[in-house]
Length: 378
Ligand code: FE2
Image 1 (tube, rainbow, N blue to C red):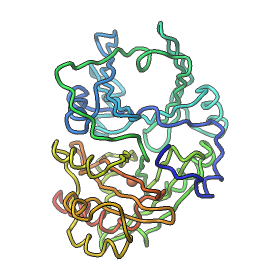
Image 2 (spheres, rainbow, N blue to C red):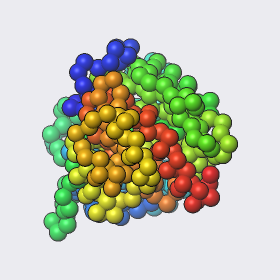
Image 3 (tube, rainbow, N blue to C red):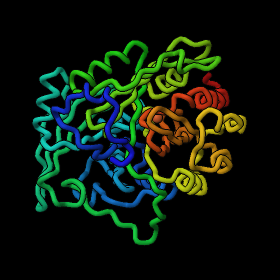
């Protein structure tokens, strides 16, 4: 993957890719109105119409719209009647990520490897086929009600998955904004569960812990949290896990856990090759980003050294910069994107850096706290 410098830092060698994981196949969101959600991701975020499943394809339970942008595929699913598991999930959590699907060469082997190492089953291997071949999918639980589905698609030449048809929207196809692939996906877990999830990713999935932040790294005057970053061996799948730490006021992780009513996906980071163009385009289309005080930029060059970009557009857009031993990165965070103050997106451009922007945590968390203050949840 282009964002990962070669060779990877030594710590990645602690991972063992017995599944192995080739990349993120798709993310599935359970939402209350899949049709309108898909429209938002097209109009505001540059995704393209891709696939559909619903009444017209013989699915009488739920309706799903799939959108795509380069290697990123999102599915938005809503129930077509009451009493479904999707409906119960939305009633409890609001809109959110249910599935992180991982592309594997053999979904039965990946499932058996995970189960023999202590995973909790979500879905035994199922072969789904149509006239274009077959796909095998299996699934296990991770934190909260979030699941990892293993997708084996070597023997499938169809459009997306069996059961889906092409979704075409001839009259409205806004341009992509340059989002390329999912860089990482962060989970929020209850106090005390971070190390359990670290163990899960190490033992069940063969991941390595590549980074760790404690409440001294991640704290402001009011709030604190702890985080550990798990990665598979090729560095394509990275899952940071956050848990709240004691602070003077309620942390952003506490707010999430309260409003999501449990553990779940906090943010999905999507990579771009040109963050200034991507963010300009997203902002023009109405995507809202966290506001960063202009004083952040006063010390920027002293902190991160020379960078290729002009400071002015970064300041104008509120893009943050951080440097590590390998290089630097640029990043920005949206406001939460559904009714509940739960999930948001990060846009990231890596210029060598393999880390996550530790130097920006303070500015970022103060920006989040200003939003919490407005919501009365700090
Ligand atoms: Fe992130």
